[in-house]
Length: 298
Figure (cartoon, rainbow, N blue to C red):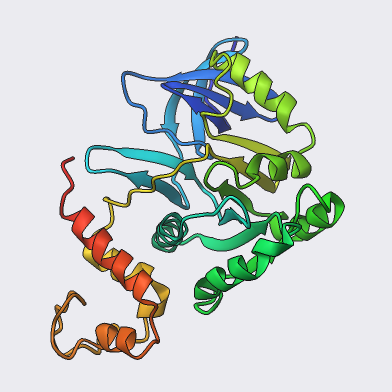
């Protein structure tokens, strides 16, 4: 067996155990020592220790890294993604807080965003949901309306051109229909997930880890567990103000060069909120995130 270095892509992670795709092969790998800063989507250099196992030697330079954090620790979501799909639905209701936080995370990571409105067949809730999403379309985020259950073929046809040549991560709260969408796009997803789960020895906890599926050699889709919280404690004040894209016309136009856009006089951002150019809910989230970033303990 050769001990030469090989390169592969991390397709799933559980604790410090990783599943790496090398061409048609899948290898179970660990990291050297106690380091576990490897993310799904990472390109890694590894050495085999047996026919189907190996050790990760190093991580190749990442193009992007998406992660969330609370005041104690960071949780890597995925590396090298080019776009983020936020899945929301007419029912059950989604939280604007989670959507807006995901948008901020994507902006700060340099990842483009699409909002996917699923379950459009629940027509009585549709006008209200569209109204809520206007806040995002107004600042330039595209919203795609689909119904994975009622019109699967049309949904698949709408997705395919958006996915081609991209590495896409899907996130959303539980109940938004994300798994149904994944199974539509990747017909063998359930089988692949069982294989991954067995390889990583995660038993029945198949939905608690992030996993990557290759559609072809240039196209990948990443499914993440549904979560209700999206902490962004890692973002500094400068990163935060730039991650709200509707702030950009006003940055640098405040009276004070070090304006925090909280309650300062002649603040261009606050004036824009008063004038209805910036949604009060979005500015309130900025204030909340600013507060969180000052609480970081790691």
